[in-house]
Image 1 (cartoon, rainbow, N blue to C red):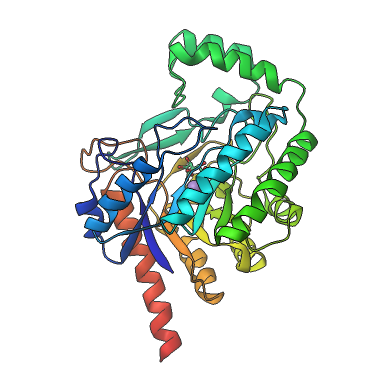
Image 2 (cartoon, rainbow, N blue to C red):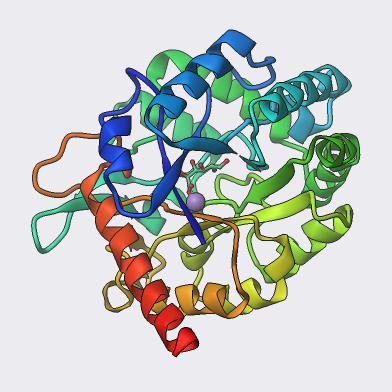
Length: 355
Ligand code: CS2
Ligand code: MN
């Protein structure tokens, strides 16, 4: 298991590379050019600037998360070919600086979604929280109206001035079915996987978060059957999955450990975090410890150990502790604690195996 840590870039993260390199066992950053809009080619000078910074800190940049996919690709519009060609040009540049894994997602419009970014927990820390009743059964236009009213709904990336685009996007997805999404994904994979094979890059799809349809938008990467179907759309080691125990774990029916075993040779990148799921479908992101959430993280690490996992792993989101001011879910303290839990479990398994 190669431990890595997400870093949002110079001036875009409260956590510094100097801090990251002091977390035991962390060897690289998980990075992206967050200011380049989806669909545009990443400029080489900006890629090289991240490489220089990482080199100076003694960290590698093998894993990129994410090269985002333009909505026209997910919608299957004729303009997708231009965006796919830009995507491949970005992949080529990333290969030049040694990138081995590119994580991405195939979610319509939104990345992960929560209703409260700073939900207070019993111990006074705060965490990302999803209140099902606030999100489910809401019509897209009702949602836009609610955000405009400045309600408590929190949509990262959807500031009021961008809402006009949101309306148009919902309109564009109105008649797009799940089967259309599968077909559009197949088209995308058919174009990019041969390029990935040629470049020695593994493309690793991130599951949808939450793993069920919201606002009437189709979702496909939500459970074991669908991950299998996605991997079979193009049968190649370059078509792989970022197995996120937190995203998939929000649905208690998902057997994460079973997935690690089934997809063992198709997981170059693991996101490991815990989530506590309530009976009414709400969920909150907890510490990594098995006892604190609904996902048996010690069991997850054991499963990775069992399959002889040699891929990259990162703690995913963390709580906000000790008054830390940081990007929601991406503070230093809880993710560093999470890493020590992961190593603790891993090392004890390793010692037993070597005994
Ligand atoms: C999230 C996502 O769960 C997660 O890892 O932080 O933002 C994730 O990075 C993207 O969905 C991957 O494309
Ligand atoms: Mn994740």
